Length: 471
Ligand SMILES: Cc1ncc(COP(=O)(O)O)c(C=O)c1O
Image (cartoon, rainbow, N blue to C red):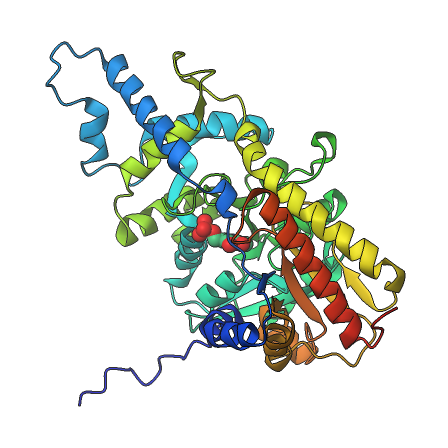
């Protein structure tokens, strides 16, 4: 038999979330055989209550009919131009009109004037991560990616595909990455002969760290990135899944300095994940060969043309429909002023779930703050729960026992720490869990009941584990 695997192809480790979903059916059965109900505090998926597409599909259809009417065709059998475009090869940048509308609305929401010609479509934020990595990887130069410890598993998986890229990670405190460590890691990577193109992070609703960076820390990190000449890749899926009051919302790196930032917008959480509509946006200019310069958007476009060539124009048209609203079915669609009105439809559920989780933790564990800590997320889907007392190791066996003994599905944190962070601290994350409050199978009142029960079962379990049961 031919050996199809090249000898130097590195084996990708299987992520803990994948291992978890593979072992879940068996564990679920074990728990159910004991009469235990399964409680979901692990999955990072949009809630079914806010991801039913039927209303959206009706609005999309009506929006397309309005587009047809606006074309003013005399012949009722003529093919509308927008339909022809949706089914033809298009521009690698996607339809100009969608990008123009999106840049106006998003720019208004985040107080920056965006240039639609610098918006590069990507296949989800996942595709954005891959695109920005590919821009720098193709030359073959040894690279270092700076990121947080812990960081997003999808970023680690993508970075791990490149054999000449290494991750240099930065520990965080409760305001964000530690500035001194950030600077030192950039310098250490350069001393090791690596080119440092960017720092990848999720400043709002960090997945998995369960908090948002303070405004002050963003400034400090941005100043270092400017001084050191590296870009900040800002992955922003939870920017609108935001629980702060309007006046307290912290601006993303995109608003602070679009020339130092590569911002990744995705429609997955504010809209729907299936259509994979997302954009990379950057006003950065880079030096390329022989002193010439190019915008990062141009480089991304060249890379994207080779990888994807044409995005799905119908998906963009659907996204364009989401950027419009109408007061009632008889009224025409008009461009939205803001995406916050779309977010509000989702936030109702996430806000309520977050409050149920935090209220439950406070009520059941508030008297034991010496033993337990949990982050209070200003955005996103997650809180990180830490056992402070020592003696608890949240490894795979612990996670399996949580399902088998209590019916609780939670995610361990250790796997989100990049390899270099685990060398510095071999027990990094082994006292932590990622608790997600975004997903349950039930909706409405049953959702509230199920989550309340899940948090109750969780609190009782951790009290038992910490040896304070019944207190
Ligand atoms: C930090 C982060 N980046 C990217 C993604 C994936 O985004 P998309 O669905 O747009 O690929 C997620 C989704 O869970 C995420 O949490």
